[in-house]
Length: 72
Image 1 (tube, rainbow, N blue to C red):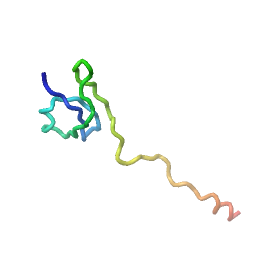
Image 2: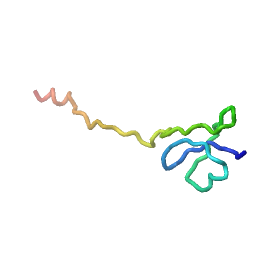
Image 3: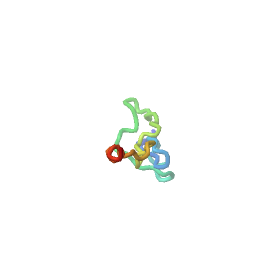
Image 4: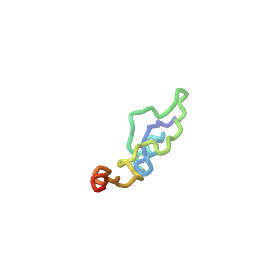
C-alpha cells in the first residue's frame, strides 16, 4: 500500500493527500497533518484551504468628516 502525505499545493492553496513519492514532482509543501482516515483511505481535498497572503478590500478611503464639518 502506498504511503500518503498531506500537502498544500503552493500554486492553488488546496490541501491534498498524495503518494509520498510524487511530492518532488510538484509545487507542494508537506504538512504534519494526517493524510489518511482511520481506514487508511486518503482524506478528501480541501479547496482553497490556505488564507491569502494579503487581504483584499473593496472599500476606498473614507472622508474626514470632522474637517468637512469645520468648513460649514
